[in-house]
Length: 280
Image (cartoon, rainbow, N blue to C red; front, side, top):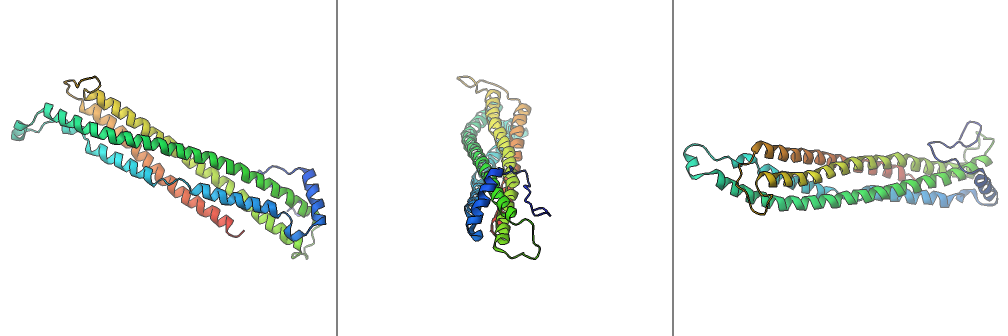
């Protein structure tokens, strides 16, 4: 409320329709100020609750476990294992034997990482769906703020001019209650966008991992002589194989960092929205 007693819309919310404010002011003249605007306040609270529930959905623990598993598999599949031992130990060793063993380990790893890739696809879809849900609840919360602004416009129109000695009137108290609810809802809006921004980075990172798994598989299949119908006799380029593997490991590390950030951010923002809602 401004110094002259008029109500000013702040925070980027849509300006209420003056005709709607006048209509509500007429209702206020005929009704009880103690309950004025309660449906609007209840709607805003319900949307705050839904925002909180949406922020809390989508457990990311399993995604972290999948990436941890993929990292372990890749770290155990070092291209250096293709190199035969030196000296006497090498008498019973050979490149052909090591290549055969390495191919079998690669085949086993391929199955496991394919499962990880499928899981990442499901996680990406889940985060994307939640992003859509956050968009809807953000828009609905903004609409609730607009409705509260219309009611507050009616309240403060009836309180003009302001009597500084009349701080405990039912209408003043109702205006304070509606304002508290409106301010809490408004403060929640950028927090919801914060979750979405964090999730956008997470989706990008998970998608890079998923693409990296495919690139690793295709490159190693070719490099190990397995791209045709029958295995070829090849001498794999260990540097090439290591480069492709390390690229995927770097992508996994980046995705795990984004997962940690996303989980922490969700907990933080959920706590902030809960703190906004609790006094109401």
